[in-house]
Amino acid sequence: MNVHFEVGHPAHVHLFKHAIWELEARGHETYVTAREKEVTTDLLDAYDIDYRVLSTQADSTPRLILEWALRELKLIRAIRAFGSDVVVSHLSPVAAQAARLTGTPSVTFTDDEVETRSLRRFTVPFTSRICTPACFEMDLGEKHRRYDGYHELAYLHPDRFDPDPSSLRDHGVAVDEPYYVLRFVSWAAHHDVGRSGFSREAKRDLVDYLSERGRVYITSESELPPYFEAYRLPVPPEDIHDLLYYADGYVGDSQTMALEAGLLGTPAVRSNSFVGDDDISMFKELDERGLIVNVADERAAVARVKDIAENPESAAQWDLRRERLLADRVDVTDVVVEETLEAGR
Image (cartoon, rainbow, N blue to C red; front, side):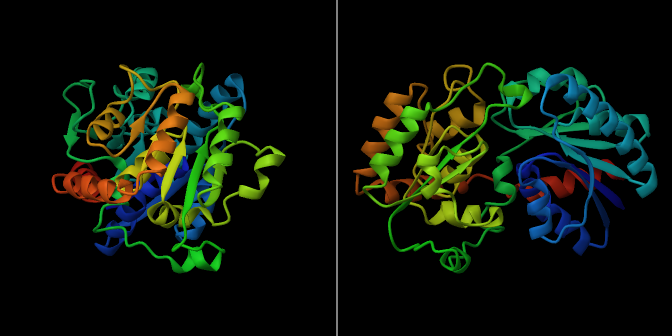
């Protein structure tokens, strides 16, 4: 079978990488088309996954519309050239529509109700099936399939992830000494309009406090102010999960990295304007399970960070909660592989 993966974000590389390797090991052909956004192609290179870039992330709404249109035309040609039997993507209107226009089955994965509401009418009518975590609060109709897991368990499930401190040490990270990871996003994506995260003042408060307790490593989508340059993340993007695993804590306004930290058993605090009754379901679920602390108010979030950092039992508590959660969650790579093969038959 010729399996076509469409990736437009670094998180999509992680979501699909093990499925790509698994399908190839079973004798199937894989083909990856990519979008230049942040470190997407850096990760594909690091994992030795062949790909073809179809477009680069646009920097304005008019240019985004043009990018989508040109990307869809290129993707249609790519599907025909590869002879794709099935197209797999993460909530991509471009992929779903191109697959429909070429008569190719498609599988769409999504885990974010906020993003899905904005893109539903451009994606769901065109895809063959749409797969979400069981906790997903929307009903997407007869094509909707649910599984007991989260996207991050496609690559952080214990059957897929084996932490390795060696590369961290090579980049100057002492895993046996206290350190904290901070992640700040740019809030420039189409689904982030009107949203916000930590202010510069709160970021500085976090850095000042945590740097007294250990090393601080910052990863940011936007350019770091001079004050934060000394804390810039020293490891390559493919080592970020090892860094999170050994960290004493994670703090940020990022969505994905908060989930990753919590699922790795690392104390995690997330603060942004998504937090609240209408928050994304998986964040609410992992908050209820004690793996992510979601706080809308940044001052309250900073206070929670201090409480967790000063509690000597925090690490053990998070490890126990992680074990309990994983006992009834699946390896999501298995879901990706089986849904893909079933759709492509």
